[in-house]
Image (cartoon, rainbow, N blue to C red):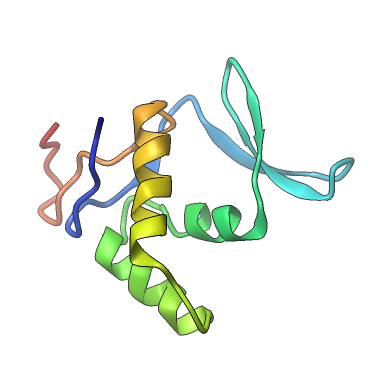
Length: 99
């Protein structure tokens, strides 16, 4: 199972899109096989996954926005998405693919 590290710069995989579903009133993650309904926290995390910010930077940004952020939960969420191939995490701070 992939494990994100602090220097990774996660971004949505090319075949994945995040959008807002007005019928559900929620953000969704769209893949060719499925639609995943996101809660506000999941949407906030994924909005920061732009391939520019590191995981460490994403966690810092979330801590600036919210009173309580569980780093392990955020990393586990990113790991699950990487395992489903919804998230590319193999980019280091130097911008090179490492995985």
